[in-house]
Length: 339
Image (cartoon, rainbow, N blue to C red; front, side, top):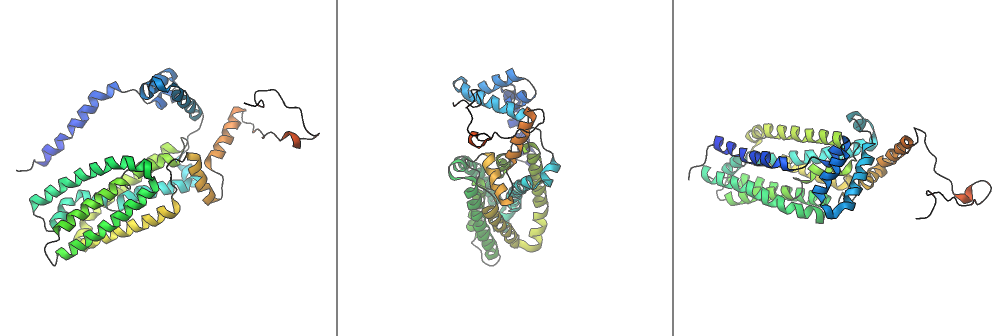
């Protein structure tokens, strides 16, 4: 059966866009966006629509969190780069994005047909195998949704990268042997499929939400903008350089990807925290211990107390027994009454 022309395949992508155009008017605005813009009632209605009427307590808690976040000043890119307590989490997030791209995934996807032809498949079978690449990527990503919450981010990243290293080694060996002895086509195809699976369960999805887990709302917008820019720039570099590299060094290009994969494993193992079931405070405390500084939230809470008291820093109340004159009679205000 003849394959459809590229222009027809390209036009098919209009279908998901049309579906979005039809369905988008029926979805509410972002509750947080509405609240931060001052539309508190609409924000509450949107939250109830999303969470359901049986989650009104959760809606109230989320609105209270929005109120707290609305009083927090957003940080700039300069702050992220100049303050060490923020620079190290940012560097980790950038490394995660670079790991996703420089380990070779888009080179394999963009040039999968060429790789299969280099492995000895004819043009027809190479294109069929390429269809399998996309199918396996989708299926493996579905399973990743479950694994991420039950196994953890760090373990999946390291496990996925180790699997990609093994797959790169098998693919490299198959391509080398194919130049000398025919019959390694199946090994090459299976190596590419395994490469895709290991990528999809860890290094594929995790870097995209890692940034949102290591930064609070002060730094999250600008940190996300920086890391996404790095990701797409690395994507561009890999896509532009893979074919010239393959023409120059042949299958040894996968040795280069293997080196990046190994370096990523080492960095993540020693310098990236597990973010599963961790709050932003706990994650920043991990980095603070490495920097021998207080976590970001300590300064944020201090600034918030100053804002609440017209810029004047409030000292923590001393223990009654340590105050001058001995034990004092307990106050009856709500601040000191036991709950």
